[in-house]
Length: 120
Image (tube, rainbow, N blue to C red; front, side, top):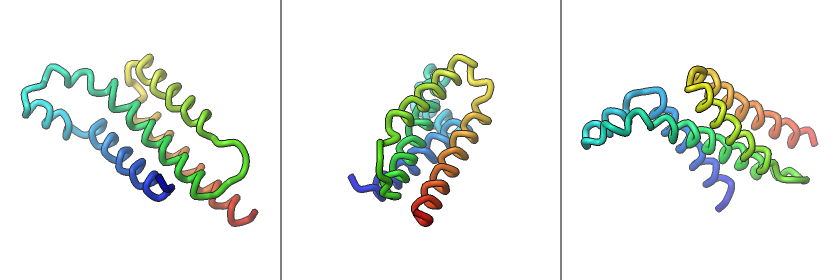
């Protein structure tokens, strides 16, 4: 898969997960098809999906930058796991702050990659 497709799919996944986490879109859909019992468990899947999608975006940005050296993939996977476990452990108390912080970190990482590529 090329880096542009990867970036696009990561962004789509991130937006979808964010919309489902922070708006009642998925709750209405799930309730509409008669699966209201799983509504309480949606966050356990949606936040890891959000962080994984942001990780895909970060990896795609790295690939687009054409950087040399070791891949950041192990670090990205580790951060996805740590953030997911942290939110579940904290019972989603800081979900909005952590999610915004993760998205901001990906944006700053992309800017840093772009700046390092242009100047290097």
